[in-house]
Image (tube, rainbow, N blue to C red; front, side, top):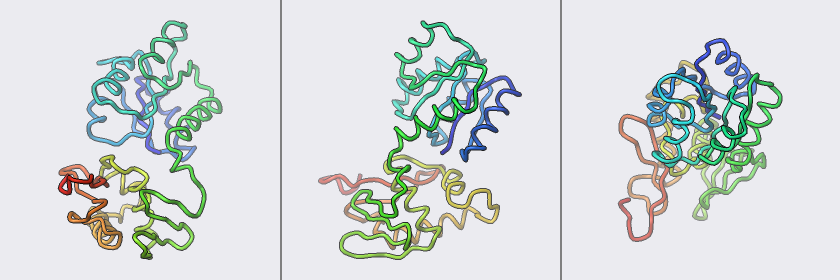
Length: 236
């Protein structure tokens, strides 16, 4: 999962980042609230971890931006030294999903993170070899996708990319995020490689610009979005 961490103390930010990365997550760290707010419009973040006292917009202000301005439903966890009951209730009432008081206790912190991600992204935590998403049946063992009474065999990378897009249907996903999810830190996974795989997925899974049910569309200057075609609005 991709986690956005708001923490202005460099040593603590590094410590928390290492905890999260050790659990297999990708992390972007922000030292002030303004930078995180800018990133919200640029990146697709699965979980926000917010400190309260940070420069240039507090964590509480960032929370209000996430919920009230952007209307995002991604989980928010506060990790802060503010332990007053009123602060905790204010944060939870404003839309935070959980609250951890510093100093960070790694096992408890990771357990809370895991619980939030498990509850929010049930589909992604499904370890079954057969998955059905938007009437497409994914077979993780055979790397096949069955839909509309036909079955397509995908390469390993195509399957991983397609499954991730279906798990995040209707969300705009950045090119960087897609590349990281499929190729990890492999520097050979260049931009052109992603485009080629997207083209093959569109063709094999009937996700073109003229498809009647689902369309995999580019988001200019950003990435891609898998979108449902609404009845009566074929050009949406």
